[in-house]
Length: 626
Image 1: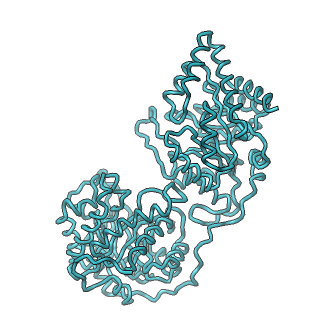
Image 2 (image 1 turned 60 degrees about the vertical axis):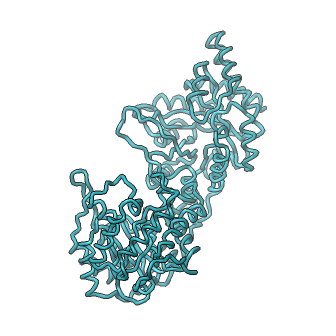
Image 3 (image 1 turned 30 degrees about the horizontal axis):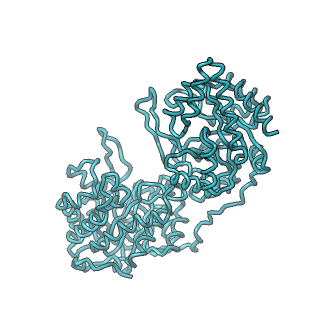
C-alpha cells in the first residue's frame, strides 16, 4: 500500500531512507514548549493552531530545521477525534491533520523528513475501559487519513502508556499505508510504562507487530531513559529512538520549568546513541537550542552495533490458573454451589471508633447473615475507608465482609495496591463500582480522579487472580478475589447499560448486585435482554417514610420508584409512622416475591440504619423461601 497523493512536493529526504542508512539522526523537540514560549496559553487547542495561526506553527518547524533536525513531527499530537471533541472540533479532525502535515512539509523544504505525530486518545480502551479496540482503531484511522492527505512520509506514534492503544494506532496506520512507523512508549522512573509493561515486553510486542522503529519518549529525562532504550533495542532487534524530556520539571512561580541545559541534552544524546538509539531528539522542555546541541554531538558519533538479545515472545498474559471460585471465600463457595446468600449494608463510621459498627456486625452474624456489605461513609466527611472497615470487621465481628469498592478517587496503581493489601489482610469479596461525581462537602479544594472504571478494574482483578499485574508482570501467588459488579436495571439509557453490563461479565465478574428494586418487571426485562446466567443479588430497600420514598424517587440517581409505590407510602403515613414503616417492609417483601425466580440472594439496604428491620425482613423472606 502507499499513501494517497497529496499534491505536495516530495521531499529529497525520506523517513524510510533515514531508517535504512544505519546512521544516527536528529529528531526535533517539543512543539508545545516552543508554542508556549511564543505566548500561546495552555488552555487552547494547540492542534487547531494549524488552521488559526499557521505562520506560528510553520515558524517553530523552521527553527527546528535550522537547528539541525532531520525529522519534523507534525503539530498533531492530540489531533484525534476524541481529544478534539473537548474543543468541539471532532468534525475537523481530517482538516486539522492535513493542515499540520502541509505546514511541516513546507517548513522542511526538502531538508527534513516529516512524520505524522499521533498521541493517545485520552480515554481508556479495553480491557481498562469501555472503548473497544476496533473503536480506537477507527478514531486513529481518521487522524492518519488526514496526515496522509497532507503528505507525511511516515508516522511517529508517541507517548503511549498502554500497549493495546499503541497497537490500535499502529493498526490504523497500517490499514491505510505501508509508510514507516516510529512507535514510542512513555516510561516512569522505574523504566517501565505507567501500566507496568517492561521494555523487554514492549520491544517484543513492537517487533511482532512490524513497526520500523521502537522507541521511548516523554515523562523522564535522558539519564533514566538511557538504560530503558538499551533494553528496548536489545529486546526488539529494531532501530531505536529516544526523545527524553529536558530533565524533570521544577515548579517556579507556578510554572513547570525544565532545567536540563542544551549541553546536558547533547552529551546524553551521545550516550543514548551508544546505548543503541538511532533517532535522538527531545520532548517536553526541549527547544531549538537543545536540538542544536544534540545535532553537534550526533555529528561526532555513530550508533554502536546493538547486541540483540534472543527475541522473546510477546508476554503471555494468561498467567496461572485462577483459584476456583468455591475456594476463594465462603461467599464464593455459596455462589459456586448455587446457594441463596444474604448481606446487609453498613456504612464505614465517621471518625475512627469501631465499637458501634462492630456491635452491629456481630448482631448480623448471630442472625445468620452471610456477609456484611461495607460501603464508604458520606463523601466530604472524615471517615475510615471501606476496605479498612471491612478488615477490622472481619477480624473482630466474626462475619465475612463484602466491600463496595469505588474506582473514583484512585488511580490504577493505587487500586492495585489497595487490592493487594486487602488480599493480604484476608478481604476476598468486592463489589466494584465506577462511582459518581458528587460534591466534596467541606473539602472544597479536593478533586476527583477517574482513571479506570469498574470494567477496567474487573479486568485488573481478573489478571491479579491469575498472578499478573496490569502490565502483565508476575506478582507471585494469584490473589483470590471474588469480583462483583453493579447492575442498573432501571438505567435511562438501557442500551448503554446492557453494553456495559456485558463488558463486566466478559471481563470476569463473579456476581452482580442490583440498584434498590421497586419494579420487578424492569429487572426481569433487563436480565432477559442481557442473556447471562451470572448470579444476581437483588437490593431490597424497605422504605421508612413518605419523605424517604419521595427522596428516593426524585433525588437519588439510578433509583426508580414508581408513583404507585409513593402513593402507597403516602396512604400508610396517614395512619402514622409505624404504619409507614410496616408498609415499607411489605413493599420490600413484594419486590422479592417478584424476582425470587431470577436472583441468587438479597442485599438489605436500610435508609435509616435500623438493623432490626433488616432482621425482620430477612426472617419473613426465609418463611417465603421455605
